[in-house]
Image 1 (cartoon, rainbow, N blue to C red):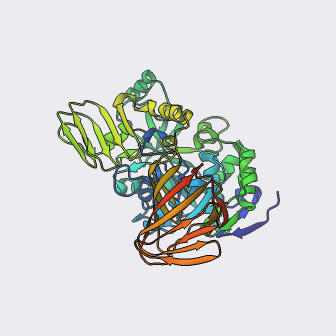
Image 2: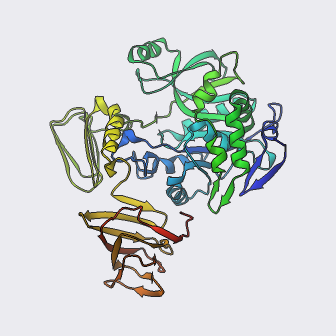
Image 3: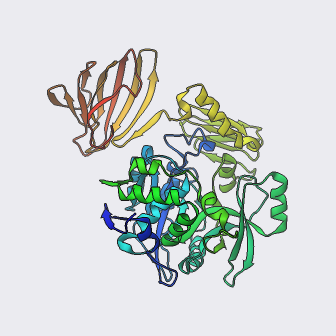
Length: 509
């Protein structure tokens, strides 16, 4: 590969040689860039979190989604480092529109890199590292998963400031959580020598242990949980990856180099990125720290800030305020004689728990979960069984978000389906056609601009129209308030894949 560099969509791309020679530890680097890894699915929080709308996009412990809380996490950071105003978010194709919308609603402008395929966290961080080296400048990345919860932001900032000092001199720093209990759901970090700022050298990373071994780790006092938050210079990460996994490094460099700017998103080349090996940050790099093959020094900084990875409903219960009986309620919930239980009503129905102990109840529009708190790790297997039955509840909600708004399937039968459709002001659906269904549209609120064949006309509140099978059509909202409609579909097949798009503002095929 050559050393040629160029700029695409505000992202500097170059060859592997150019990237790894961007900076050395002798060159000062005081620029921090937030990197948010938002490619997870979070099936352990089913039925709230599903494949098409995973946990980082929902408000698990507050009004804002976990993604919104994460993109705002570096606001107010003070110290000797310059924090870049735009975070870098790496997300999947299916979540890009909601990711952009939620980020914008948080008042944050982000660089969003859309992964053409899932390749785990190491390739995702590599794409971000390449993007962080804009205009040939190095940057210290503060890489955070999008689906964690942190209660004490000032404590997080203090830990990041310490980690950034180590990152500037060329170490890979991570934030470790002093454990409060034995837990088999976390990886562990074995502490090495103590440093004068409260941090430790990393002796080694340890896989998720069995229960007995986890208890030994906690009793020893020399192991911390792995939070998955990393602070590292982009050039250091790229050099480490090039040494340990040159195929992944080369594939990611080529994918960025041949990528394209797509309006609000940057799209790496799909074929090049698809050739990258799939691996996590821990496996690809961090588990080599402390070994003869280590690419650099590793440092772990303690984080005591009310951190939770929210990896299960039990973790959600643990992270939230409880009543005098240890119960947590969200939505329309009533407890009577219950203890240590979690109940959540999302669909608006009343959830009543009588005499329950250590129970999880989660109600949505189309599913109800009842689980023992000690068995919540089994939910992932449950979702797999639901998927084997080809049930839509495994992957999608009844309410489905689209870049133009959302639809809610409120009723369906063998040859009909009724949807509530809400189109945002100024938004439009694709120009499309269906082979197997006709549609009847009724405007409930707002104004609709309808294209039907060669016709184009307006519909107001309480007016309706009919879209015959096989006719090209489009729905637009030309107004300043949301357009709300009822759509009645009828036909031999009503699946969402019966859509032929001729033109689409959002670039969907």
